[in-house]
Length: 131
Length: 70
Image (tube, rainbow over all chains, first blue to last red; front, side, top):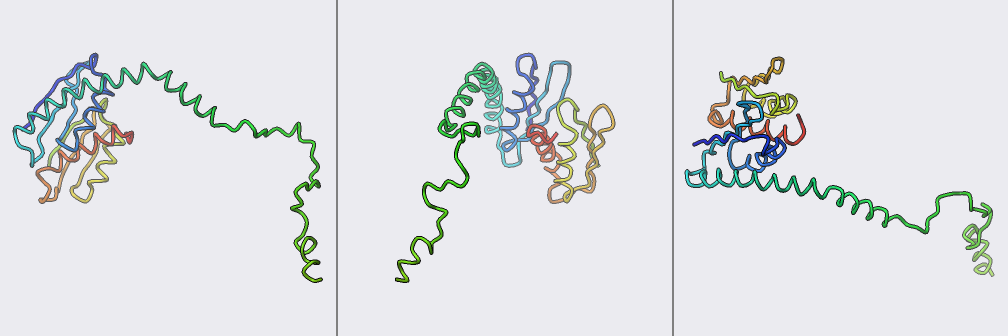
């Protein structure tokens, strides 16, 4: 069992045909051919375990999926700017404002130790224990 | 021996070669992309998979093309 569908590339761009074919390669055998300019022929062939009714259904679904993928592509193109703006905004919001990486305002001395972390343990607690 | 001709505008030569490598254990597959189209010749096909090998190969080549291996 096999069915050949000729698709006009002006209506369904190659990208749409690819994404539709990719969805179906686990359910049937797909071969693409180019019978003429702006035309792509898709040959769908049933896998050995596929019956006639299932295959007929699959062919119909394939044609519907072409429309579905075309719509997805159009929506993706239309909303590309909005999606990019959302991602930019999200990344910008995630940047910590409190961290200033510039060294211009840093007037601290490297020898300053306000928390006392540079004091050795023995100096802090050692003498008390010995006594 | 069987030869399939694939349109270069639809199938990537690298993708087809990649599929040929994947199927190397099941048949002797020669990919000739020197011409206008890509000619794939199948020979010494494993009898256990002979019925489906070419079709499965074409699916692999298409998947590799769509997946960007072409």
